[in-house]
Every structure is written in C-alpha cells, then in structure tokens.
Amino acid sequence: MALVLEARNLVRDYNVGGSLFGAGRVVHAVKNLSFSLEQGKTLAIVGESGSGKSTLARILTLIDRQTAGELFLDGEPVDIVKTGVTKAMRRKVQIVFQNPYGSLNPRQKIGDVLMEPLLLNTDMPASERRDLAMQMLKKVGLQPEHFNRYPHMFSGGQRQRIAIARAIILRPSLLVLDEPVSALDLSVQAQILNLLADLQDEFGLTYVFISHDLSVVRYIADEVMVMYLGEAVEYGTREKLFSNPEHPYTRALFAATPKADVESIKARLALKAMQAQA
Ligand code: ADP
Ligand code: MG
Image 1: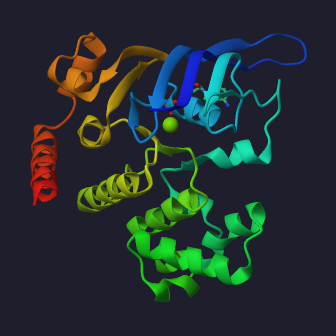
Image 2: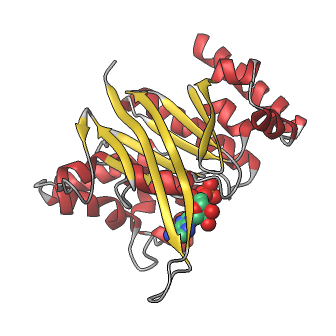
C-alpha cells in the first residue's frame, strides 16, 4: 500500500516569554518524531494534555510549520515556509477538532457548510454541489431536511457528524482528528467511532486520530504512537501495544484507564466482529 504520510525527525520548538530585550525560554513541544502511515489505516496519537499532540496535528495539517525535520504527503515533501503549499496540497489534509461548534459558522446553514469547500476548490456546477452535499449528509447519518438548518439546532454528536462530512467531502488523502469524541457522551462517542470506521471502509480514508483516552484508541487504531512531553515513547501496532506495553509511561496510562471503559470497548469490538461476519 502507498504511504500517505511520512514524518522524519519532526521538531517543533516554541519561543515563549521573550521580549525585544531578551530571549525567553524554548518549549520543545515536539521532539524528533518519525513515523509513517499507509493508505486506509489509522494511526492513533495518545498522550496526556501538554504532550504535543495538537502541535503535531497543526504541523500535519499544514497550519503550522515544523522547526526541523521533513514531512511527506502522498510521497511529496511539504514545508509551508520553504517550498510553500499549493491549494491542491492543502486539500489533501483536513482536520476535525474536539469542538465542532467553534469551527461552524452559526449563521451558515448546514447545506452551505458542506457546499462551501466544493465552491472554493472545484468547478462543480451548483446542482452537482447540492447533490454531493446531500449525499454526504446521508453518509454521515443525517437527514435531507437538515440541509437548511443552522448549527445551533443540532446536538454535539450531530455537529461532529457535520464537521466530518465537511472534512471528507473533497476526499482528502489524510484526515486528522484531534480529540474528536472527547467532548461527547459515551454512547454518542461509540456512534461517532462507528461512523468513522464505516467511512474509512467505504472511502479508504487514512486517519491520524488524536486522543488522551486509551479505550477509544483501542477501538479505532491500527498503529499507536504514545507521546510524552513531545517525545514518542512507544510506537507500534495496536496488538503489540495493548498486549505488551513496554514503556513505563504507557503502563501508567493503562492504569489510569477505567476498567469499565476497557470492558465496554471489548464488548463493542466483539459485536462489530460478529456484525462483520454476519
Ligand atoms: P496537547 O495537544 O498534547 O495537549 P500541545 O501540542 O497543545 O499538547 O502543547 C504541547 C506543549 O507546547 C505545551 O507545553 C504547550 O504549552 C506548548 N505550546 C503549544 N502551543 C504553543 C504556542 N503557540 N506557543 C507556545 N507554546 C505552545
Ligand atoms: Mg491538544
């Protein structure tokens, strides 16, 4: 399978507290990360708050640049400062945030939210834009009558469905999801995770899934990278990580995951495996 994403020795430093008259301190938010991801797979990035996950997400989605290291998307090198980023390159990666309300314009109807990327990035005629937006609405489990409603008329889970539909309507090579279910109730979390799994199967999507929650990671990941203070302390397949976590920090994360969560995730996995066989 083709590599969608490759990172070589990515570094991101922030200078903080500096002024005109003196250098401040340097925060090493991301330290020397190397990883790769094949098309159709999910890499989960897990770690506590402050471990550098969102910094990495901003680099992968070409919002922020790395201080050092190389990034490749679909085999092409990207550096938003050195080489610049074309519109086509920007289209390749999309992001879904923890709080979709923050990224949805309250005065924009959902149909317009979904048609906007098509308007900005394609030559599609209006009728086709409308058809495709309707189709995506259905794909993410919403109804045609939702097309003309405003964001405040939806629940948190529904809004996250809208954000996902908008992110994938242009078929990006890579979708970065930064804590996409962390603000949702457990039952809604499960629905959104199932939706993401279904969409991945249908469209061959590639995910970088960021979470602080190992029970969620267990459900969604093919590969897992555990971050601690900007560093990857463990990186491997889900099976390997969950059967034999090597780093003390990973074991500490496990110890902090409620047993009930782990049990309910196992039950969901078993159910999904049964459904797949049926
Ligand atoms: P996470 O998403 O895992 O919680 P972040 O990537 O947000 O972690 O932050 C990693 C570290 O980098 C933290 O110490 C944070 O304070 C610091 N940091 C993040 N963004 C900035 C910024 N724009 N300026 C300065 N420091 C930052
Ligand atoms: Mg974060």
